[in-house]
Length: 261
Ligand code: CO8
Image 1 (cartoon, rainbow, N blue to C red):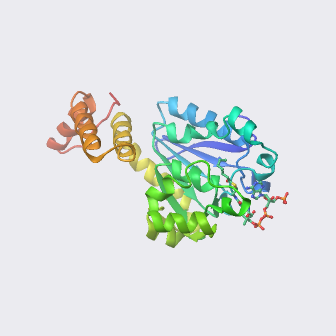
Image 2: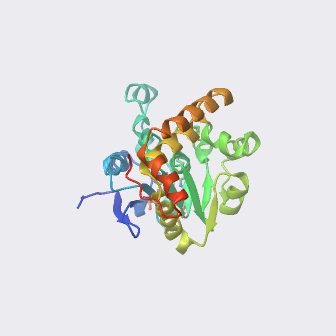
Image 3: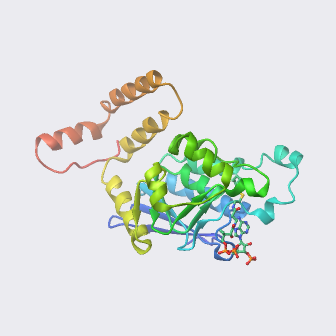
C-alpha cells in the first residue's frame, strides 16, 4: 500500500504477525542515503504501533545487506554541517524500536550497514555474508556504533582488527566471534529469520517487550543495577494477565492463549 522508493515492506508468517522490511536500492548496493533511512524509520514506527505485528525482520539483497552510508552523498559534508545538521541522528530509530528485530544479512554489511545490523536484536547471516568497518580507508571512523557495539559484540582484539584494518570477515568467522548467532545457505536465510520471528511471536508481545528491554539493559549499566532492573521487571510480569495465563496453561497442560495484557 505504501509507495516506498528505497525499501519494500510486507507481512509474513502463518499468523501474519511478522513484518519484513527489505532494503531496496540495488544500484547502490543498498547504500544508506538519507531518503532510505527516513523510509526505514517511518516503516519501523508504523510496524511498532501495529498491534498485529510481533517481530520485524530486516534484510537486503543477496549481494548486499547494505554497503554502508552513501559515500557520494556524505562526501561534501563539512564539520559544521555534521554538527549543525546532527548527522546520523536519524539512524537511531532501529535501536529505539521496542519490538524484536532480526537482521537477515546476505552479502555485504559494511560500515553503516554493519552498524545497522548491530542495532538489530539478532543477526542471522547467509554463508556468503561479509561484515566490515571500512571507514578507516575513507579517512574517517565508524559513526553509528562500529567502534562501540562491535567491541561489545566481539571483544577488543577482534573489534580493533576490524576497525583498524578495514578488512572484511566472513559469516563463519563472524559467528565464531559472536557477532552473528546463526549461519544459513543464502536462499534459506530469510525463511529462517521469519521462522524465528514467528516463534518469538507465539509468546506474549507485552512480555517480549519487557524481555528485550531487560537484555538491552545489560549493555547500559553495571551488573548489580542490571540484576536489580531484571528482578523488578520479573516481579512486574506478575501484574499481567499473560503471566497468569502462561503459568495456568502449563499447569493445565494446554497451550497458552496470550492477550498481550
Ligand atoms: N555509498 C555510495 N555508493 C555505493 C556504496 C556506498 N557506500 N557502496 C557501493 N556503492 C555503489 C558504487 O559506487 C557503484 O555505483 P556505480 O555503479 O554508480 O559506480 C555500485 O554501488 C556498485 O558498487 P561496486 O561497483 O563498487 O560493486 P563491487 O561489487 O565492485 O564492490 C563493494 C562492492 C566492495 C561493497 C564496494 O562497493 C565498496 O567498497 N563499497 C563501499 C564500502 C564502504 O566503504 N562502506 C563504508 C561507507 S562509510 C560509512 O558507512 C560510514 C558510516 C558512518 C556512520 C553510519 C551512518 C550512515
